[in-house]
Length: 56
Image 1 (tube, rainbow, N blue to C red):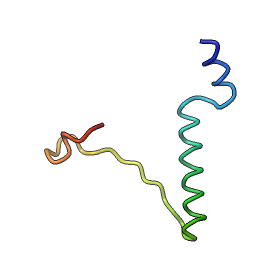
Image 2 (cartoon, helix red, strand yellow):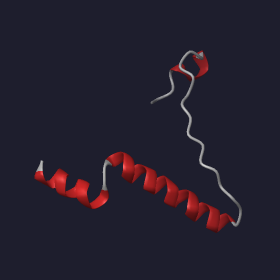
Image 3 (cartoon, rainbow, N blue to C red):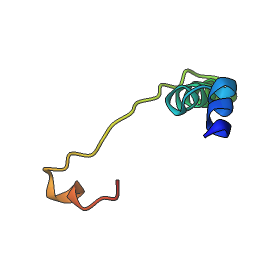
Image 4 (cartoon, rainbow, N blue to C red):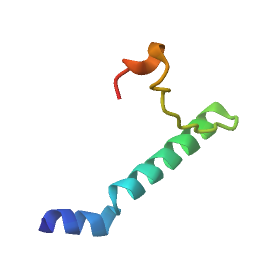
C-alpha cells in the first residue's frame, strides 16, 4: 500500500499515466510521420453479432 502511494505521487494515477503515454505516442508518431496523427478511441458495438464475441 505504501509503495502504491509513493508511485502515485511520482507518476500520478493510472488514468493520468495512460493519458500522458497516449499523448506522447501521438506526438512521436506525428514527428516520425511528418504529418498530423489523430488518436481516436472507440469501443466495439456489442449489439452487433460480428463484434459481440471480440475480446475486451
